[in-house]
Image (cartoon, rainbow, N blue to C red):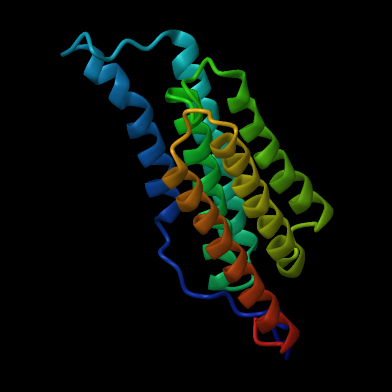
Amino acid sequence: MTTDARRPREPHFAGWRLLMWGGAACLLSLPLIAMQFTDEVNWTPSDFVVFGGMLAVSCGACDVAMRKGGNWRYRAGALLAVGTAFLLVWANLAVGFVGGEANPYNLWYAGVLAIGVAGALIARFRPRGMAAAVTATAIAQAAVGLVAQFSGMDHPWPATVVFTGLWLVSAGLFHASARLGARGLS
């Protein structure tokens, strides 16, 4: 008689992938539908390509995190980090955080994301390293916001507080996942 030595999987909704990818397709189609009814929405083909790419990368990252994450804390931390990154890029491309979308200072927010991505790769997506990577991302987010604020630029400081808070909650979830793993409970 053989036994299955694999760790049992946590229960999850079997249709989550269909909902996620279907929801992304619906989001991508909304501007096209809106363009049929109003002149206020005027997307170019490149807008659809960029938004489709953002959705594909985000959904792909969420898909991997959901399948490979060790416990719900890791998965929640990953989903929150991916969602925060998505919102950061979307808002920055749409209206910009500093002045407007044409302000070159907004490129600094790409550096915030680069810190998070580089940290995740260095950590090889392990929970303890992910906690450090996302904490570094939060610090970078706050630093960019503070520099903009104290340089006299037109910067919505509440956005900095919200995004920094989201990064820190994600880091806390990764930290909790690492603590569970260290005790053998993941």
